[in-house]
Each structure stands twice: as structure tokens, then as C-alpha cells.
Image 1 (spheres, helix red, strand yellow):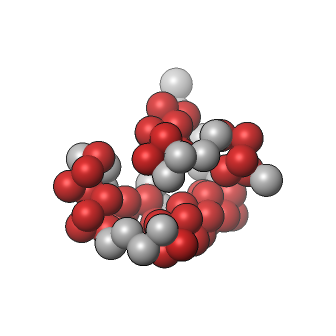
Image 2 (spheres, one colour; image 1 turned 90 degrees about the horizontal axis):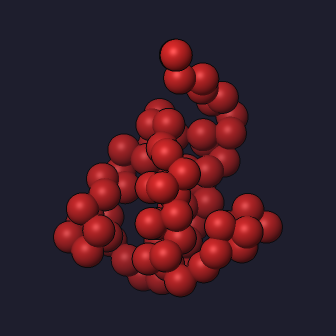
Image 3 (cartoon, rainbow, N blue to C red; image 1 turned 45 degrees about the vertical axis):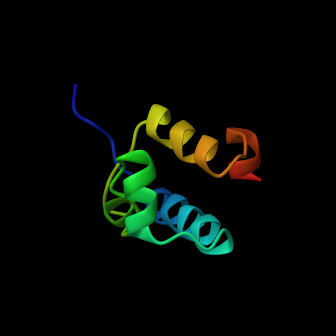
Length: 70
């Protein structure tokens, strides 16, 4: 089954992740070192991430998935 992609949704998620990272004062390099997740790729809005990856990002920033989307 092919993966579906919604460019606008991916951009919104990317912007929210970038916003959280900057609010916490975390660099992309520090985030990668802590999580082994390439946040730079995600923040460009071109990578369709899984719910599991998004949940790991939320855990890192100590928020719930619900809070992420509010």
C-alpha cells in the first residue's frame, strides 16, 4: 500500500515541532544526540513521520499527542 502525503499537514506538523524545539532551546544536533531522530529532515516538512516517531518527539518535549495538536 502506498503512503499518502498531505503537503500542508506535513508542513504544519513540521512547524509545530520546530516551534517546540526552539521554545525548549534545543538544537537539532542535541535533539538527534538525545533521540537518534533526524529532526532536521522532519522540520523541512518533506518527511512523512509515523505516529510512533511523533509520540517519541512529544515524549522528549514532555507533552502529550493531544497537546501537540492543540
